[in-house]
Length: 122
Image 1 (cartoon, rainbow, N blue to C red):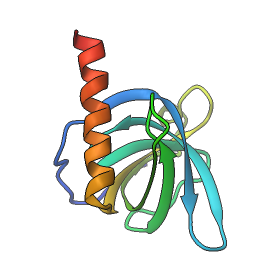
Image 2 (cartoon, rainbow, N blue to C red; image 1 turned 180 degrees about the vertical axis):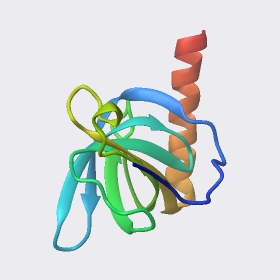
Image 3 (spheres, rainbow, N blue to C red; image 1 turned 45 degrees about the horizontal axis):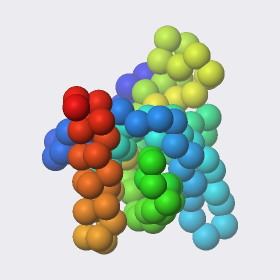
């Protein structure tokens, strides 16, 4: 089953190594792995998907850096739970939009992605 939310992707996404992401709120936490990233959102794989439209806090380390990003995100689409939409480890995909992120964190993400693009294309 695929569910979508009407948000146009504002920035291109860049593939990243599987990056742990802590998701949740004050009392309940879950974890997933980011598989691609942009200045405005990410694709995350998890065994505990969250409903489309739900907002929650996330925290993750930028690839190839020591910088941690904390922001609020919103689920804009999910894919699953049909077998063909699971990856090889049984994880489901969710598209997240960074609904509340400070400008410094957004700039750090953009710089990280530029460095990754230069490595890949350079």
